[in-house]
Image (cartoon, rainbow, N blue to C red; front, side, top):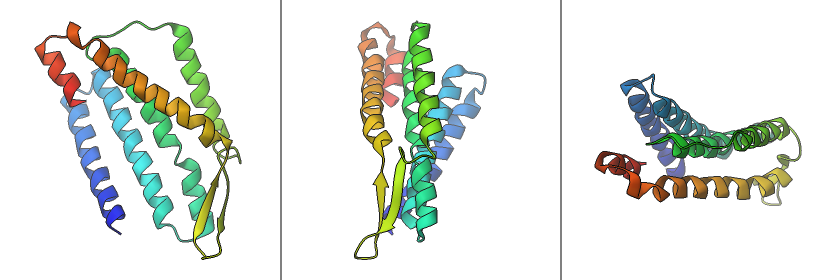
Length: 171
């Protein structure tokens, strides 16, 4: 119950933060990517919340299948943000193509047993989600992209002026 309240509060605050940043300059690429990152985070929390509060196997299966979409776009948007914020960094097009191929592959595998292979009630009549191999493969990708993104933001920290340093600290 407490988890549900915290999730709901986090969703609402995140929506306000994302909207505030986006509406402050809706034409800015940085603000658009930040909004995508916040929206992905909201989707991630929402789908986990729905998985947790669902009571029947079919709904639990549905919500658990699409839960991977939030972290998928969160890590990609964090990566993109680390590339263009506060000073744009050039990247090789092959890297961008690789990310797009990975994202499309994961999206195509969402409705398969590679993502969620099943949901069943265990002996205590508690629903148990059986994850597929996609989660095993996605976890290292997610952590590597997040760590790289954070490293990318702070590795150029010395090059930034005071205003830019402050902006990076807030991220």
